[in-house]
Structure formats: C-alpha cells, structure tokens
Image (cartoon, rainbow, N blue to C red; front, top):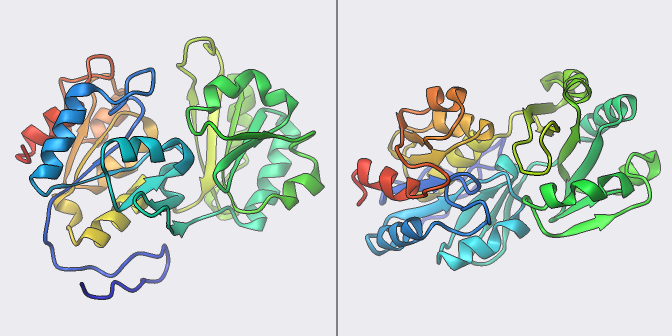
Length: 294
C-alpha cells in the first residue's frame, strides 16, 4: 500500500485510487434503537456489506468512548468519525488519526458567553465529559455522547477552564432564549461553529441544547477524510443520517439518505428519503439496497 501522507489543513490523507465502496452511517436515530442497540436488520445488512467487501464506517456526534463498543460489535475496522468530525480514530487500533480541538481564543469567547448567559454546560475533552454540580440532572441526556464523565467544583472557573486540555466541543442546555443568546455570541470569526435544537429526549422536554465546536469542522470534513483514506470519490460515498449535524455530510456525498423521521431541513439536504425510521429500523439495509450495494 502506498504511503498516504497527510495534506495540509484538516490532516486529510492523500487520495488513493478507488478500490472499493464506502457506506458511512450516523448512530443515534439512524443505526441505533432508542436504547442504544443496533437495529437487528441493520446489523445483518452491515455483515452482508462487509462480506461483499464494502467498507462500512461511522460518523457520529458521540465521543469515541461512546462509539467504540458499537464499532467493535459490528466488526468495523479502520477510521471512524466522532464528535461531528472533531476526532477521527482507528476503531481497530484506537489510534487517534485526527483531532480538531478548540483554539485558546475560541475557548475564551465561549467562556465569556457561558458566564454571561449561564446555561448548564459540559466540556468534551480527551475522551470524557467534564461537568460541575449543575450538570448532574442532565447526565442521563449527555451520556448519549459518552458514559465517561468527571465532575469538577465549577466548570466556568477561569483557572479550571484553562487547565483542561484538548477540548473538542462544548454542549450546553437551558431554556430556548438562554441557548439562543449564547449561540448568537459564537461565530466563525471567533473560531467556533454551533447548532441549537430542542431536546427531544423523554424527561427533558422544553429544554434546548447547543453544541459548539471548532469552525470549519463537521461531518462533511470527516466523511471527506474517510473517502480519501479509502480511495473513494465523495460522489460515490453512501451516507445515512437523521439530524441537523448530519446535514453537512448529506450534502457532501453523492448518495445520501435521510431517515423517514428526520426534520424537513435534513430531508431536503439528502438526495433520497428512506421509508425506514428510527423506531422500526432498517435504514442502513434500505439505503444499501437502493444504492446497489446489496
């Protein structure tokens, strides 16, 4: 195998000649049940794809620690995208292939906004979620990203904030006005991008969430990295997703599929809309069949 090397910018491997097919799937709301288990028909479909030599990978908002066991249960090897593209890891070796942490300046801007508007916040650093006492009631929600959590006395204490290394993302929760005011202060000029959304999880109705990460990094950059690594053109990549963070990925690839329950903005970003939904499962199987991979 030729040496891949690294391109400048996002650490992309140099393009290899195309040898295979690539399917990239989101996890929550796409591949997984509400209990975090793989839909059985999709497990069978992935096994059949691997048997045919199709490369199957993952691109998720979860941290690697919340993704690794799923990848292993599906016998996936090679790179997977975590934290919406902020972290790419080899699922077979646990090797960290690319990281995109927040800059010091971005963290300063973020800290100022969090102090001003006081949403409950969580730092995603290394491979754990860091929070303070205010975060305890929301742990059942944020643990969908990772089960590894560590509590500190006060997250937004300046000394504490700057002592934490490798912060890849910040998740904040609060009421809608609080979250929107916080997000309004974050911009690409400050090295940040963010999305806001109503939390749909049972027990947290009425809560809004925000995910902030490094500007210029998304599931689109992750799937581009994966495509280059495997020597597949983006036009030939099959991607399946269901939520707002999937939009960049669905727009970037040539064969994109949105789950049936996806919001309209997500469906409009995809080339195709599936009949399968998150409750019945089968989205990966349907997408693979419609794309001619099975």
